[in-house]
Image 1 (cartoon, rainbow over the protein chains, first blue to last red):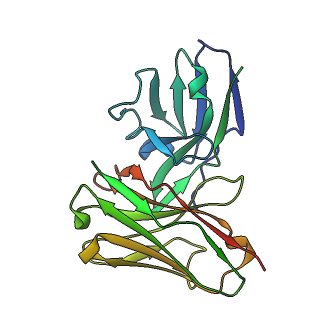
Image 2: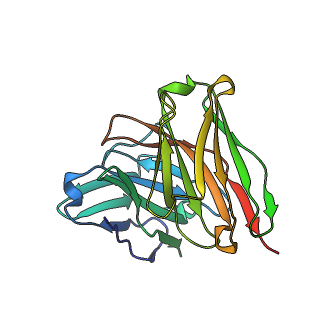
Length: 106
Length: 121
Protein backbone atom coordinates (compact mmCIF):
# COMPACT_ATOMS: atom_id res chain seq x y z
CA UNK A 1 0.00 0.00 0.00
CA UNK A 2 1.05 3.57 -0.61
CA UNK A 3 2.86 5.41 2.16
CA UNK A 4 3.61 9.05 2.89
CA UNK A 5 6.53 9.86 5.20
CA UNK A 6 6.85 13.06 7.22
CA UNK A 7 9.45 14.10 9.81
CA UNK A 8 7.92 13.71 13.30
CA UNK A 9 8.94 17.21 14.34
CA UNK A 10 10.20 20.50 12.97
CA UNK A 11 11.29 23.52 14.98
CA UNK A 12 11.44 27.10 13.77
CA UNK A 13 12.12 30.50 15.28
CA UNK A 14 9.40 33.14 15.03
CA UNK A 15 9.64 35.08 11.78
CA UNK A 16 11.66 32.39 10.03
CA UNK A 17 10.51 29.97 7.32
CA UNK A 18 9.35 26.52 8.37
CA UNK A 19 9.59 23.71 5.85
CA UNK A 20 7.75 20.42 6.26
CA UNK A 21 8.32 17.61 3.78
CA UNK A 22 6.17 14.68 2.73
CA UNK A 23 7.76 11.84 0.79
CA UNK A 24 6.08 9.16 -1.28
CA UNK A 25 6.82 7.13 -4.37
CA UNK A 26 6.21 9.34 -7.40
CA UNK A 27 4.25 11.77 -5.23
CA UNK A 28 4.87 14.52 -7.77
CA UNK A 29 2.46 12.76 -10.14
CA UNK A 30 -0.33 12.95 -7.57
CA UNK A 31 -2.05 15.86 -5.85
CA UNK A 32 -1.00 16.66 -2.31
CA UNK A 33 -3.05 18.42 0.33
CA UNK A 34 -1.92 19.71 3.70
CA UNK A 35 -3.95 19.95 6.92
CA UNK A 36 -3.24 21.88 10.09
CA UNK A 37 -4.51 20.49 13.38
CA UNK A 38 -4.23 22.36 16.65
CA UNK A 39 -4.74 20.57 19.98
CA UNK A 40 -8.36 19.65 20.60
CA UNK A 41 -9.48 20.90 17.19
CA UNK A 42 -10.46 19.38 13.87
CA UNK A 43 -8.00 19.48 10.97
CA UNK A 44 -8.17 22.45 8.60
CA UNK A 45 -6.96 22.35 5.00
CA UNK A 46 -4.18 24.88 4.35
CA UNK A 47 -3.02 23.71 0.91
CA UNK A 48 -4.78 21.62 -1.75
CA UNK A 49 -3.89 20.55 -5.29
CA UNK A 50 -0.20 20.92 -4.33
CA UNK A 51 -0.11 24.71 -4.35
CA UNK A 52 -3.58 26.16 -3.88
CA UNK A 53 -4.51 28.02 -0.74
CA UNK A 54 -8.16 28.08 0.45
CA UNK A 55 -9.74 31.43 1.15
CA UNK A 56 -8.94 32.56 4.65
CA UNK A 57 -5.56 30.84 4.80
CA UNK A 58 -2.73 33.38 5.15
CA UNK A 59 -0.40 33.95 2.21
CA UNK A 60 2.55 32.83 4.30
CA UNK A 61 1.43 29.23 3.66
CA UNK A 62 2.66 27.78 0.36
CA UNK A 63 3.10 24.35 -1.17
CA UNK A 64 5.07 22.58 -3.86
CA UNK A 65 5.23 19.02 -5.17
CA UNK A 66 7.83 17.46 -7.43
CA UNK A 67 9.53 14.12 -7.81
CA UNK A 68 8.94 12.14 -4.65
CA UNK A 69 8.45 15.05 -2.28
CA UNK A 70 5.72 17.53 -1.47
CA UNK A 71 6.66 20.50 0.70
CA UNK A 72 4.70 22.85 2.90
CA UNK A 73 6.44 26.13 3.62
CA UNK A 74 5.37 28.69 6.18
CA UNK A 75 7.16 32.00 5.78
CA UNK A 76 7.31 34.48 8.64
CA UNK A 77 6.17 31.76 11.02
CA UNK A 78 4.06 32.96 13.92
CA UNK A 79 3.32 31.41 17.29
CA UNK A 80 -0.23 30.67 16.12
CA UNK A 81 1.21 28.34 13.44
CA UNK A 82 2.36 25.87 16.08
CA UNK A 83 0.35 22.73 15.31
CA UNK A 84 0.45 19.28 13.80
CA UNK A 85 0.56 19.18 10.01
CA UNK A 86 -0.53 16.24 7.85
CA UNK A 87 -0.01 15.67 4.16
CA UNK A 88 -2.54 13.68 2.16
CA UNK A 89 -2.68 12.14 -1.30
CA UNK A 90 -5.07 9.95 -3.31
CA UNK A 91 -3.64 6.70 -4.64
CA UNK A 92 -5.34 3.63 -6.09
CA UNK A 93 -8.78 4.69 -4.89
CA UNK A 94 -7.46 5.25 -1.39
CA UNK A 95 -6.77 8.33 0.66
CA UNK A 96 -3.42 8.23 2.41
CA UNK A 97 -2.27 10.52 5.21
CA UNK A 98 1.28 11.11 6.27
CA UNK A 99 2.16 10.38 9.88
CA UNK A 100 2.08 14.06 10.80
CA UNK A 101 4.69 16.63 11.76
CA UNK A 102 4.61 18.60 14.98
CA UNK A 103 5.71 22.16 14.26
CA UNK A 104 7.19 23.95 17.26
CA UNK A 105 7.74 27.69 17.14
CA UNK A 106 10.53 28.39 19.60
CA UNK B 1 -22.43 28.25 5.65
CA UNK B 2 -21.40 24.63 5.29
CA UNK B 3 -21.50 22.75 8.59
CA UNK B 4 -20.96 19.19 9.72
CA UNK B 5 -22.33 18.52 13.18
CA UNK B 6 -21.50 15.24 14.87
CA UNK B 7 -23.14 13.41 17.73
CA UNK B 8 -21.71 13.55 21.21
CA UNK B 9 -19.12 11.47 23.00
CA UNK B 10 -19.86 7.83 23.71
CA UNK B 11 -18.63 5.48 26.42
CA UNK B 12 -19.15 1.85 25.54
CA UNK B 13 -18.17 -1.55 26.89
CA UNK B 14 -16.21 -4.04 24.81
CA UNK B 15 -18.48 -6.01 22.52
CA UNK B 16 -21.12 -3.28 22.29
CA UNK B 17 -22.00 -1.22 19.22
CA UNK B 18 -22.02 2.51 18.58
CA UNK B 19 -23.54 4.70 15.88
CA UNK B 20 -22.02 8.11 15.21
CA UNK B 21 -23.95 10.68 13.20
CA UNK B 22 -22.74 13.51 10.98
CA UNK B 23 -25.50 15.98 10.15
CA UNK B 24 -24.74 18.32 7.28
CA UNK B 25 -26.18 21.70 6.37
CA UNK B 26 -25.51 24.63 4.06
CA UNK B 27 -25.22 22.65 0.83
CA UNK B 28 -26.94 19.97 -1.22
CA UNK B 29 -26.19 16.76 0.66
CA UNK B 30 -25.98 14.48 -2.36
CA UNK B 31 -23.44 16.66 -4.16
CA UNK B 32 -20.31 15.78 -2.21
CA UNK B 33 -18.84 12.58 -0.81
CA UNK B 34 -18.41 12.15 2.91
CA UNK B 35 -15.38 10.54 4.45
CA UNK B 36 -14.68 9.08 7.88
CA UNK B 37 -11.32 9.55 9.59
CA UNK B 38 -10.10 8.03 12.84
CA UNK B 39 -7.62 9.54 15.25
CA UNK B 40 -6.54 7.40 18.17
CA UNK B 41 -5.31 9.21 21.30
CA UNK B 42 -2.02 10.95 20.57
CA UNK B 43 -1.87 9.46 17.09
CA UNK B 44 -2.23 10.66 13.51
CA UNK B 45 -5.12 10.73 11.07
CA UNK B 46 -6.28 7.44 9.56
CA UNK B 47 -8.69 7.34 6.64
CA UNK B 48 -11.49 4.82 7.18
CA UNK B 49 -13.32 5.18 3.88
CA UNK B 50 -16.01 7.20 2.21
CA UNK B 51 -19.61 7.06 1.13
CA UNK B 52 -21.07 8.30 -2.12
CA UNK B 53 -23.94 10.44 -0.93
CA UNK B 54 -25.64 10.24 -4.32
CA UNK B 55 -25.75 6.44 -4.60
CA UNK B 56 -25.20 5.41 -0.98
CA UNK B 57 -22.30 3.20 -2.07
CA UNK B 58 -19.67 2.88 0.69
CA UNK B 59 -15.97 2.21 0.21
CA UNK B 60 -13.96 0.93 3.15
CA UNK B 61 -10.24 1.33 3.64
CA UNK B 62 -8.07 -1.64 4.45
CA UNK B 63 -8.52 -2.48 8.10
CA UNK B 64 -12.04 -1.11 8.27
CA UNK B 65 -14.06 -3.90 6.77
CA UNK B 66 -16.48 -6.14 8.64
CA UNK B 67 -17.22 -4.24 11.86
CA UNK B 68 -17.59 -0.80 10.29
CA UNK B 69 -20.64 0.33 8.34
CA UNK B 70 -21.28 3.66 6.62
CA UNK B 71 -24.86 4.66 5.91
CA UNK B 72 -27.00 7.65 5.00
CA UNK B 73 -30.36 9.19 5.67
CA UNK B 74 -30.72 11.65 2.82
CA UNK B 75 -34.05 12.91 4.19
CA UNK B 76 -32.16 14.57 7.04
CA UNK B 77 -28.83 15.10 5.23
CA UNK B 78 -27.02 12.87 7.68
CA UNK B 79 -24.33 10.24 7.41
CA UNK B 80 -23.69 7.53 9.96
CA UNK B 81 -20.79 5.42 11.09
CA UNK B 82 -21.68 2.25 12.97
CA UNK B 83 -19.04 0.16 14.70
CA UNK B 84 -19.96 -3.24 16.11
CA UNK B 85 -18.15 -5.61 18.48
CA UNK B 86 -16.22 -2.70 19.93
CA UNK B 87 -12.69 -3.26 21.17
CA UNK B 88 -10.49 -1.15 23.42
CA UNK B 89 -8.37 -0.23 20.39
CA UNK B 90 -11.42 1.42 18.78
CA UNK B 91 -11.07 4.20 21.35
CA UNK B 92 -10.53 7.27 19.20
CA UNK B 93 -11.99 10.48 17.87
CA UNK B 94 -13.98 9.85 14.71
CA UNK B 95 -14.31 12.69 12.19
CA UNK B 96 -16.54 13.06 9.19
CA UNK B 97 -15.15 15.24 6.41
CA UNK B 98 -16.60 16.49 3.14
CA UNK B 99 -14.60 15.89 -0.03
CA UNK B 100 -14.75 18.47 -2.81
CA UNK B 101 -13.23 18.63 -6.26
CA UNK B 102 -12.86 16.05 -8.97
CA UNK B 103 -10.87 12.86 -8.42
CA UNK B 104 -7.85 12.84 -8.15
CA UNK B 105 -7.74 16.55 -7.27
CA UNK B 106 -10.25 16.29 -4.49
CA UNK B 107 -9.56 17.12 -0.86
CA UNK B 108 -11.36 17.55 2.47
CA UNK B 109 -12.63 21.12 2.77
CA UNK B 110 -14.89 20.86 5.81
CA UNK B 111 -14.53 18.62 8.84
CA UNK B 112 -16.92 17.83 11.64
CA UNK B 113 -15.89 18.53 15.24
CA UNK B 114 -15.21 14.87 15.90
CA UNK B 115 -16.89 12.31 18.15
CA UNK B 116 -14.93 10.66 20.93
CA UNK B 117 -15.73 6.98 21.30
CA UNK B 118 -14.26 5.41 24.42
CA UNK B 119 -14.32 1.66 24.89
CA UNK B 120 -13.67 0.41 28.38
CA UNK B 121 -14.98 -2.24 30.73
